[in-house]
Image (cartoon, helix red, strand yellow):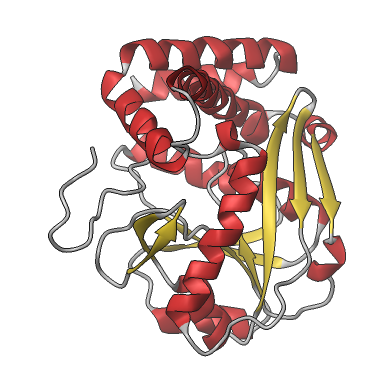
Length: 287
């Protein structure tokens, strides 16, 4: 079944973007209607993070986030299989691109907006550096091979597994690699710290500050936004005075900055993830 789905994604690469987005809209609407367990996760996340909104406003936001999820998933067909000229035309890279000039060790802080794969592709195509990232292996071998090949399609890229040791990642940074890091999810209690995220204590990896310190790297935020023409990918100026002396304070700062990015396009954030799955000792599950 997975091989058939991958074949259909390959075939969708030749469709006009408007048709791909229509299919993504349909996929998102079906997921919203049928996958009630995941809709409950989204509803819970939005209720906790946007308590000031009405139920109807949050319901509409939830529907839009499922549509964005569906569209970004269908977009992987052309991102990973369309002609390079088509991919380049649909990806716009803006902002502080000069932050990636030279060979200074750099961490790209890439929050989980739905366009995260488009962002990595846009940067790899247009900025000739060596890139690394961490990859979570998929249970289905065919799907795993497909996703990995898509993410390594352009540029000089390689991926580490989640079991890769700290030493190897730090060594790659010090050698001048750009490390594409997505640390804003709940990876469980191990190595996490509890810091506020929209006022709720959230288990968060202090990895941005840790890798910046050990790798002697600057931190540059990359934001991806779905647009009718494809994606706009924006690089922000490097963080100043970071990391500080306290990794917990640094991680709390990361979450505060992330909140501002989310508020600018809340429906495009990865609310389908159980962001508050891990609770402080004694607190019940919110899901």
